[in-house]
Length: 214
Image 1: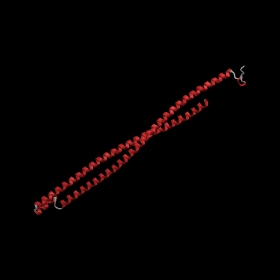
Image 2: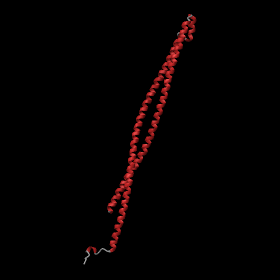
Image 3: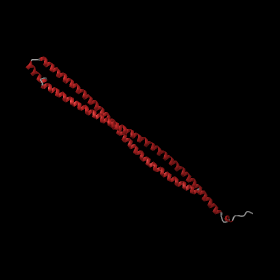
Image 4: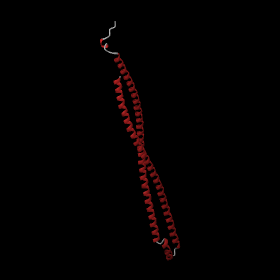
C-alpha cells in the first residue's frame, strides 16, 4: 500500500487551495509587472530617441549660431571699412571744396573775376582779360566736376553703408531667433532627460518586483 509521507499528512485541501490561489495571484501580478515593464521600456526607448533628436537639433543650432556669428563679425568689419571709406571721401570732398573756394578767391583778389574790369580799364588789354576769364571758367568747371565726382562717391558709399547695416541687422535677427530656439530645445532636453531617468527608476522598481514574484 502507498504510504503517505508524514509531512503531507497534515496538509489539508483548504491549504492546497489557498496555495494554488496565492500562486495564481502571484502569476497574475507577475504578468502585470511584465506588462508594466514592457510599457516603461517602450516609453524609455521613445524618450531616449526623442532626446537624441533634440541633441542633434542643438548641435545643428550651435553650428548655425557659430556660422551666423562669423558672418556678423565679417559684416561688422565690412561696415567699419565702409564707414572709414565714407569718412575719407567726405573729408576729401571737403578739402576739394575748400581748395576751389581758395582758388576762386585768389583769382578774384588778383584781378580775375569782379576785379577783372578794373584791370581791363587800367591796362586796356582785353585779350588778357578774356584769357583770365576763360581760366576762371575752366577752373571752376573742373572743380565742380571733381566735387560732383566725390559727391557721387559719397552717395554710393552711403548706399553701401545702408546695405551692410541692413545685412548686419538681418543676421542679428537670425541670431536672436536661433538663440530663442536653442533655449526652447534645451528646456525640452532637460525635461526629456528627467523623463528618461524617471522611466529608468520605475523600470528598475518593476523589474525588482517581478524578480521577487518569480
